[in-house]
Amino acid sequence: MTLIEAAGTVDFSTEDMRAKTVTTGKFSKGAIVNDPNGVVTWTNPFQTPFCALKDVTINVGSHRKYEVTNIV
Image (cartoon, rainbow, N blue to C red; front, top):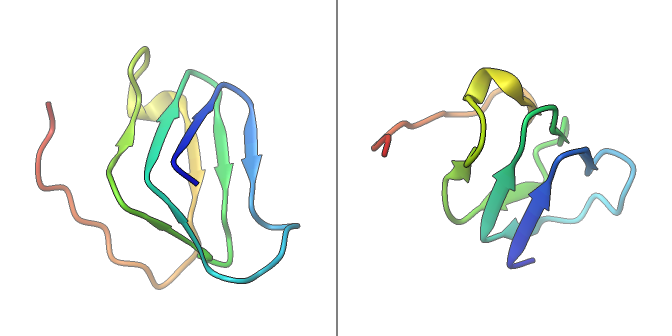
């Protein structure tokens, strides 16, 4: 997938469990990203263009490494 823009729920927990790649994710206030099995690889960082990170719920599973390299 190239771009996911969401204000609602993006749920990867009930889909095909094969690996997926998403280039860009733009999430608005109240968005929920549910990927508890960690099947998605994000090419670019998440974006929250009209809200703060605390305004979205992101579940990308356990045993993951998070890296903040730049906040702009």
